[in-house]
Image (cartoon, rainbow, N blue to C red; front, side):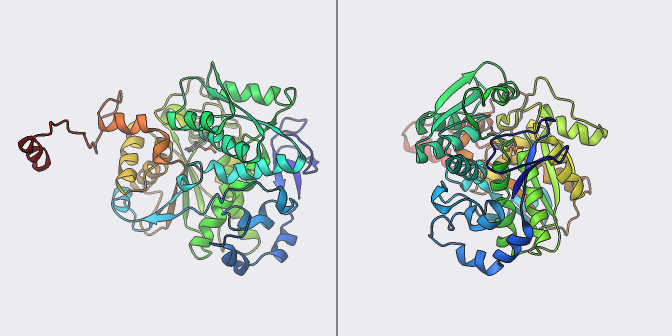
Length: 424
Ligand code: F0G
């Protein structure tokens, strides 16, 4: 296991604290898959699933041999993350137009988002290295997740969030779990640029997804999905694209699973961006050689309000390797798809609904075929952004006409009025 630059191939040991190469390329973890293959079996993973044995009952550490085989168990900081459900049924399938559409609800994680899958590994790595001060820039979920893991391990956490641009559920988590919360002027991209440039000088270990250990943990979403589907890869996995760490991780996870012979193929990766924050989609559709940042990203899906995604090269590699696609959807499409997801009782935050809105669009465009098996990732919990949900149902979102509105009814405690309200 080592760290390797994705641009020039230079290698670094796993215990060296660095996030990029001298050539400024991002680092990735290269696993010793030959050794891993000998150490694991489907039976081993089946036995751990549902167990309460620490840390192997976690949906991430169940796959420790494929994620971080070198870390001693006692250095692992875990709260049983992962173990999220795959759901299906109406009205989702009808809405998307697919008989075999599933959603994997990563919002069932301990802090309510898929970030826990990666964060447990980044914080464990910090613990392994004896680092006590960690930091991230975030649109909200990364900071909420980091804050919880810091609280468990009593680490000193500092989060940088764009002032006024983070959903209330997420901000409240950072404050409540007790990290130093810096609400900075400027957007997420600017905050991330700052922490990238200054984290070493400030003695902070950075746990944004440029940290390759985050990606290793997030791979477990692919592993768990395959296991839940009887060690079969779906035809497609669809996910929202923001900073593009997730697409990098899911692609890497399936490639590695395929390499050790646990799945027969890799699914096609579809990354779906919001139209107002779509630099990766533009790169894809216009066939550009490199990413042109969107300077003032705007979208109701604040989690993916990102104009300059750091992991675009890694994500591009995975989309290409899987013969995938990149698509974009409007805020209207996002919020209507979210209303459908919410109406199933599963629910999600706006960014997550990119997966469902994107699936619908790809089916309509004939890119996804009606017989194909498709899994959409629901990245964050419905409670993360109550403002967006309520304002949709109150029809108070600028530029959005709610197709699936469930308006609250104001009524006095009067029998006649209530009868009328119920029957009306
Ligand atoms: N969905 C949700 C709910 C997110 O919070 C994020 C990213 C994404 C999708 C996009 O994933 O960045 O890997 O492409 N949130 C980050 C944060 C940026 O700071 O919480 P990505």
